[in-house]
Amino acid sequence: MEFYRVDFRPGGKLESEAHFRQTSEMIVVSAGTVQLHSGETSEALNAGDSAYYAADVSHCIENPTDQPSTIFLVVKYQT
Image (cartoon, rainbow, N blue to C red; front, top):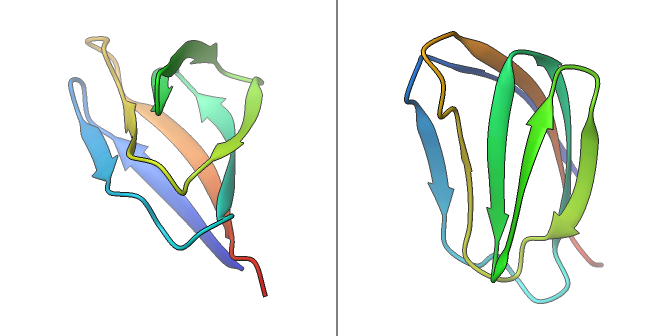
């Protein structure tokens, strides 16, 4: 597992190619708003929201607003 705090500037983006097979990620939004894209799925998340999603496909987290946002990200690799 890996654990990160990610601070996004307005318009900031974190894009990732597919990780190893059966890798998943979980995010918790602690401030602001982010848009989560995983494969063909997309969802808007606000402060206090969380999401669990496949990371063995291309995925992206972005801040589409003019305000900063912060998330906590956990990457879980299959062993």
